[in-house]
Image 1 (cartoon, rainbow, N blue to C red):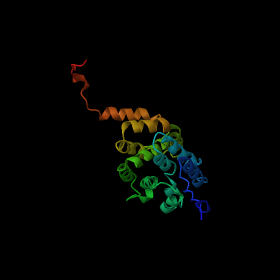
Image 2 (cartoon, helix red, strand yellow):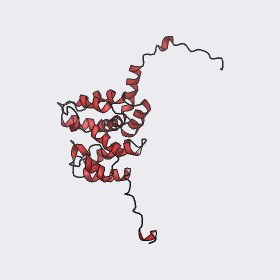
Image 3 (cartoon, rainbow, N blue to C red):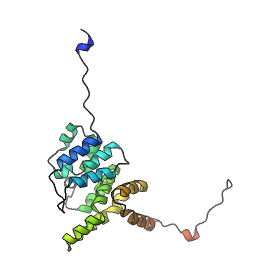
Image 4 (cartoon, rainbow, N blue to C red):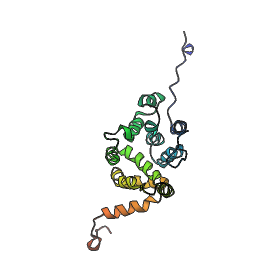
Length: 204
């Protein structure tokens, strides 16, 4: 019997960045944030902020809250075709899966142990720290400084990745944080510029 009677099975379609965006919108469709805004806007913004990175990191960005805020399990994500690396990142940034879910800063240290997870969390932190959002939260809860934990987390997360990687994310997610980031770099720079000497190389 000829081979044409046994057509080859087509492989399962690859889980793409676009698929992740659709899944994120559907999974968070009815959810609202603290300001009663559609939560899907946040997860889409985090994914968009990672546009300069590879697809598996971007997928994790769009789906970074799916294990925290929906019943979707690790196995369900894998069964949908979400890359295992993306699922690992999602789990790493999921607060309830941390060793001590009630200790936010300890959770940041756990995230910072993984480069890819730190990238996703930097994007998450940056979007949560947009000036307009911070001001709205402060107006709603004047007795609770809403950004302290995000501010304190940033140096820990930034230290886990390259400087240019931080810049790329902040430029997309929250350009207002670039000035703060540059100030942190200046503080960390202990070069004595006043007494700096430049050797004149023979090739000049």
